[in-house]
Length: 155
View (cartoon, helix red, strand yellow):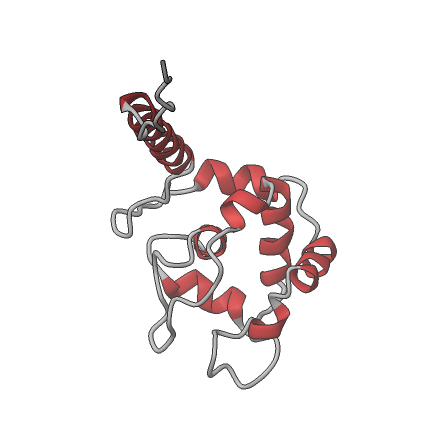
């Protein structure tokens, strides 16, 4: 009497279901992460937009620490060097920001431009600024950076 060798079985339904569940869980995790920190809508800003966030961020803001962060994050490479053809320069920014996106104040506009750079593009520039600062920076760090940017006046 001869025993037949065991045949290798193709992946069963359990493997297929397992892979499908893993994909579904991964998709749900990504969707949850995106909903946790959604960017505001491009339109629909008003005088109160970001008001609480900006007040909190600027409460103990230090422009010198903001300058350090600008260099650490390498913002200076695009916004403080060159002729402004690649990105808007900081020079005169405090005055420009106050009028760039009514009814936002200069502080509110700079908050939005730092954390959600794709919401309002300055005419003549592409959306090339990193959009990761909302996840990477604390409110206090954002406040320091805004305080630093506000030191760039036309006067």
